[in-house]
Length: 126
Image (cartoon, rainbow, N blue to C red; front, top):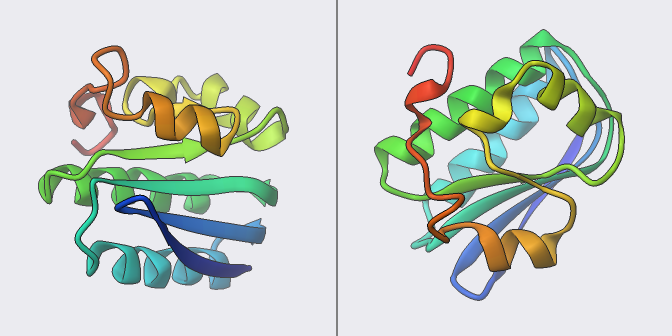
């Protein structure tokens, strides 16, 4: 997995590409979240549109990231596109704790609005 953190309009965008699975994928997202959390953010977005595979460890690191952002008072959302990663997360009913968006534009417009500003208390472990 490869990640990069971009900064845009007071927000951090973690861009992930490859396999979000146990091992390197988890570590890469964790390190990118460290960089994102160290910035002064209005929101954090994790762009998963280039992620080709996701396992339970990858789901776990996303939930942990959401809880970590919540504890810091920073809204976190996922950009999933129309691919299988979004379908997996929706099948697991994680949209209750991880706001999901089809593209970056809708994520910037929607994250923090009343309809997507929800506590992550519905997250497993939260």
